[in-house]
Amino acid sequence: MSSIENLAYSIGLQAYIYGYPLLVVNRTRQLTAPIENGLVLNQFVYKEELANPAEKFIVSPNVDTLYMYAWLDVSGQPVILHVPNTHDRYYTVQLLDAWTNTFANIGRRKTGTAKGRFAIVGPYWKGTLPSEIIRITAPTNTVWALGRILVRGDEDISRVRELQKQFIFTTLSGNSPIVKEHKDNILSTTAIEDLSAIEFIEILNREIRKNPPPLEEQMLFQTFKYIRINPFESTTFQNINLDILKGVNRAIKDAANIIKSSNQFVKARNGWLYSNKIGVYGADFLVRAVVAYSGLGANVKEESIYQRSFIDDMGEELTGKQKYILHFEKDNLPEVDAFWSVTVYNVDFYLIKNILHRYAIGDRTKGLTYNENGSLDIYMQHEMPKGKESNWLPVPKGNFNLVMRYYQPNFRILNGSYQTPPVKKVRHICF
Image 1 (cartoon, rainbow, N blue to C red):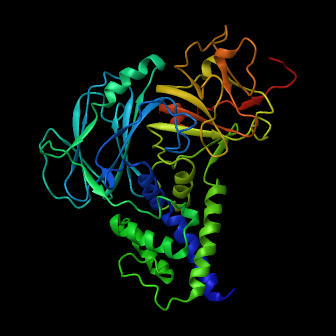
Image 2 (image 1 turned 90 degrees about the vertical axis):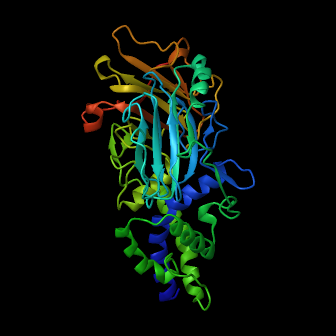
Image 3 (image 1 turned 60 degrees about the vertical axis):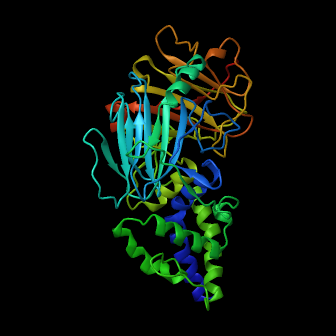
């Protein structure tokens, strides 16, 4: 390998990790936005059922809320979000920029549950708004509005569906804000790690032009321009040294593997991995890329904290070949101002089919049984435990992982003094 290829490889690794979240957002938009003579933007899509194993909308979906989402283009006029009175029911409309940073939450924790209007404006809009409309300035022209409304049980779903329909977008004058965008025939059909060097460079340049990063990050392009990533100049591949493309092609594959295997930014306690950096990433580009891969749409810790476990109390991988108990003492039950849950996922971070159609257990699980002393046991195994179905969280035959969610966590969870108990392997007990 030539020195030119090695240099391109080194720069390509950095550029891929840096640009990966931007491409993930674009690819997700291509795959999830409504299509009608192009991608339909500035309009909610309402998910009318709880997430299920067939759902590939996002990785690690929760089964506590009904989702709704919209892809917004705020490069021109503001988009006005109308929210209904939810009468203290938990909801949030999380607003993410094109680089996956959460820049605002509209909902119970931050803005309350009363009826209201919010103007989502682009970074360059200089107009004025009526005093009764709350202004939220987006850092980028592309915004992902990801809404979640609490479901209190199967019998509650129809009520939440009706509530969903009252979340709408309009223009300032009250008209439809819908705009359309051409579908990207490459990103809509090709995984990011399978892009060729030229495809990767061209698409990344295009997306950065649409959604420039903060000024302090633009110095990176002084280095990236060696491999033709420089969105502020015209890109040409004429007379490019082929060793540069070889280096970038290698970098794409290796950087993808780095993202998939990185976890050095997380902390571990009782086998649960967590990070305080989720949601807003600053210059932590690797963290941002890892979360875009394994937990796209993760919110800021004040709204919800996510802890993931791959191992039991002995440090061994979780597998359906074993049986486990998650035990909460009475004085160590989850401390939240909204709700909590623990959800099972497969190795690809999706939900898993089971005979109960139960993918999580939480404080709203119907029939959940507490012990006489007020403590709580959750049984995790592949086969149903006799007499304990109400507290059974089915797991697959093979490896799996768990996500513990705390919505509106209280101060002990936020400051780290609360500890989620370990997942304990059952030894010499039959149930």
